[in-house]
Image 1 (cartoon, rainbow, N blue to C red):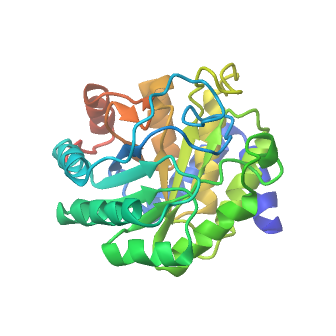
Image 2 (cartoon, rainbow, N blue to C red; image 1 turned 135 degrees about the vertical axis):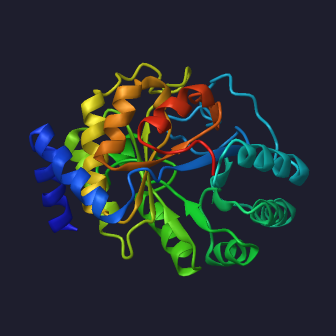
Length: 311
């Protein structure tokens, strides 16, 4: 990891045009610039999470106004997945506010949700909290393609954001998912109060995984009322662009996903992020509990780079 850390810092602090040139050149070497994957994310169990993540409106530790909702039924998830496919989604993600994926009927229901998503011809991803190796294997057997478990920030800054689990807990779940044959979706959140060095350290941690994550979501904090970070200062747009570019250079084959917070970006900022190496977005009006750009906003954005809003 030290070599990745040094390289990340070197890249992050390059003059912006030099960084963009390097990142875009690598992006074109490994990807088509008009290949932007569209993902949809559904909250299948909302709120009452025992974790104390300082950014999250679903934490039971804070009074945020997010309504709690128990695990959805399989037919409701199938309906949502079909609607997402009709809107052009290629990957459908199931998100549950659990610290640890449960056993018993709830987990069996999630497995059936995965089967239904796959039956529609979509890629299936899930983020259910920590996993045991047995749970990871069961998800793989059900047809799950990818497991999302974000590192969020650097190892050093992590304890300032979350105290109810450790960085090593996160890495253990990633290892369990990888050993089960699932691809890995892991990234971070910008705007938590971290420094540029923290962003570089997080990217270096991800790049040092062997193999590297196939998917790297880059989220902008959406401050939630009632959380410790409700008044967090937004980061500068160029900090997002630099992070995307460094992610692309350190992990050239990965999909770098513009995830939460796109509503705060102008079309021009998003186009710059695509130029820097982002090649996936989340569609739909909501990401878990946060707003997301509408289809009418995404259509001209994707058309500008020759990508389609339809699969």
